[in-house]
Image 1 (cartoon, rainbow, N blue to C red):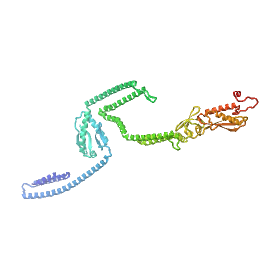
Image 2 (cartoon, one colour; image 1 turned 180 degrees about the horizontal axis):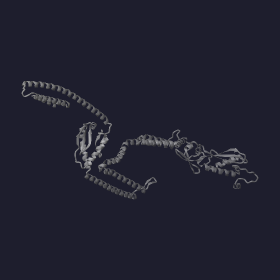
Image 3 (cartoon, rainbow, N blue to C red; image 1 turned 45 degrees about the horizontal axis):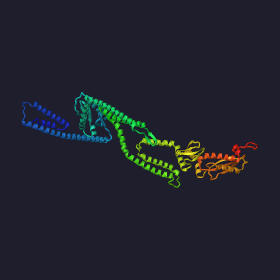
Image 4 (tube, rainbow, N blue to C red; image 1 turned 180 degrees about the vertical axis):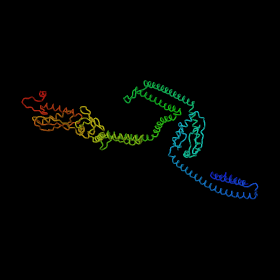
Length: 614
């Protein structure tokens, strides 16, 4: 009974929770045991066998000690309760702080997840998982690269056993290892980024890594490499046979084209013009057959080259890249064509509307030009130039409407080219624009028409062509003179044909006759010479003007009306001949331009045949 309280106190101390509390209780219990055993030993050594005590005294002493131990035990329980309460409060505060810190990290990671691109762990083109956080002084990119290198080493190392990926928890991270090599260490930060716990994330990564290691080992064994090499050679042989077969088919097609050209092909004739003969048509067909052959060969290579690269895992990604390089432009073109169909429909509608509007205006212009439709103040010769102007404006309006619907009209390159062309036109077209404006003004001023005989400064000829830029004249000497319209606007123009059509063109020439000839006789002789000249009109009648009385002779000017200005040169030549004949027949000498003769027996200037005729 003496040691029962000590044992009870020790057992209570062993089962009290809390490290610090247990340590304190164990120490107290040890002290009590030592005290009890010490007292016992002291009592045993102190009490002699001859001395005896009564049982009552020992019991009384034990009860006193028991009460003291009970009081001490109660005090220790109170201290333990206080200590446990303090430990619980500290633990709760720590848990709250940790949860708040984790919640803050989680919120920060949630805000960063939408704008932060993770680093994918790529192993031979396959994305195993994504890393967002660094670890142990390495960034996420460095970790992904190290994982890739370790996976490739494990997959190619045939000395390693086919072990599965193991998971080992450590303080603050969890290792995933295979064959004694740590592949990746999963941290709490990784778990926070993935929205799960560290253990669960490691369990998610383990089967992915294990499956990829098995695939790597299967891909890098000798049998698999031999199969891929054999497949590579087989694809090359098949492609070679396809090349040979394609060339054989196109050689047969070429021979058929040659036979077709010799037997059935006919030249392309437009009206009386032979646009393409049979030889040219044959060459064109052979050219297109060769072009088709190259296209077929290119299509074959388009599929063969990616297949060759896809056979080996190391170049599989390159095969996909090459295939996308070929397919993406084709898809883009086809997609652009499909997307452009509505715009193309709008362009066709605009073009057809403008086309039929121009046709209607052309019909009205033809009616006005043929004088079937008459508009007051609008001359028939204005019809065609006005139609050309309206047609130009309508086409310009059509281009302005179509421009937004053209492919690439919104691109900077297209707009830059448009600005560049506009700048070139504006800088280099001042003279051109001036000639165009002058051509329009000349058209509506109507100073001459096609076929008119006109005189521009020192150039005389018939108008054979009028363009917006220049006007061309054909001179009586059959010379073609090109004159800019701006020059015509700044020069004076004489139109012989317009006067001849409306009033009759007056031609004139001057002769000088001596004072000894009566002026009335000279007038009559000149009028007679004009009347017998072909092309001179009888009405109005020819008339004579005396333009001067010089020292030795008076000047007589004969004037006559003609209608055909184109024969002006011929009529003037005939008039001069008739004047000479008429005066010679009348015995009147022509003292022109300056002739002086003294009547001292010198011969007359009249030809002998006219004198003998008298």
